[in-house]
Image 1 (cartoon, rainbow, N blue to C red):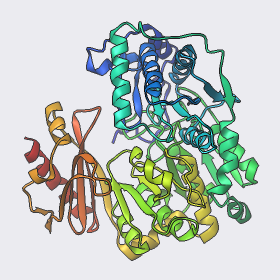
Image 2 (image 1 turned 180 degrees about the horizontal axis):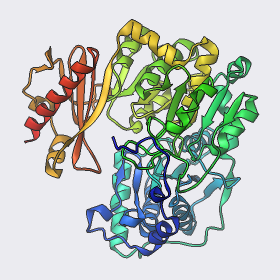
Image 3 (image 1 turned 120 degrees about the horizontal axis):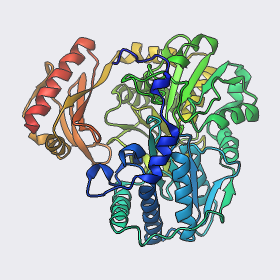
Length: 538
């Protein structure tokens, strides 16, 4: 934790927007350098133009590869495209339009030249594809999500509306790098004049009454504060207030690509992470002014929930509360609809699922795994410990297949309006019933070779039989929900667990751990977890 964490950003912390944009056009990537290649993580290709990791040639090639991929897949409908306020988003958006139009793709952009949150784009794709059209739509969101202002990001969402799976992104990245290496000779580009418009905001906001009890929120009169953190939801919260007559204040309507109004994150970087107490410090300072106060990241796929009695909620805590509430207040959901969680999310969710009599569907990290279940309603809620989640409508049909931070923020208000208790108070009730888990994530050093070994590790390679004084019950290298490879390891005992995964950007691996026996036991779990993993990848 840096000593400046949680303090206001200074002029010296701010990016030079002109230099960043100039580097986007001037610097040309060399794909023989690994750091300069197109590479899709769990949420698209990300990087800074200053490091030659997110530049014009990357976006030209990636967009052309997407065009070729959709042709290969027989996708002939419109492509919805939106962007967020990051400085690199606007030039990348323009570049993408030039390639899409040059290839004759029917493109739909925002009607009001507004930013487009990730969930709004997912909602648009699904609405088109459920409307009986003979062709299918897909989309692109130009955003690096909560990443620092220096970064750009580029995400592809195929016709199912959610994040593209690894088969799609691997093909797109490989083709993009091939195009760059070949001098972009196979790329088609033209002026982006022939584009159509779509009211992303209106379609999304008008539909909210089919998934959130907006009437109950209005009738309660609760005081709601919504902070977009300078992100793409800035125009949405005022529209939600006006459309449904809510007692809602947009606490910070400012948009600035330097994000000068942010407080610094744990490592002294500007990062729009609504689940971080340091990044949310200026929001938390106003917790006494509202009954519910919420934040969203730059593309609004993450949520932060602040209550006057509890401050900023741990994302795991709110996920457990949301699941407990929703599966008790949604009569239109399938009786056999499972609860979806990633394997590094809290075991409190497991205990809530058992109490509710619902199946738990535990998958690897990455929201893409929830897409099929959300589409057919067999998984009514999917959530990640990193404050990303979505769920189905009142009637059990799909809402979005990407994370929806606006939706989860509104759910916090519904919970208070309907139950008369804040989400923090609801979590205290869960703790009283199920126990109080201690949860943390730490990093441990690892070489690239060790990270590669961890990513392919089989649970059977672990010889330990005990963890922090308890018998090991499971050593997992594949998720129990869908059998997909974890890309790491999870070890489980009766009252604790840890999971280890290699970092995609640093020479470390991440250890997620939790214990229902308190903080001291958690520390013991963390120490032994590191010893177990180090022995396996030595």
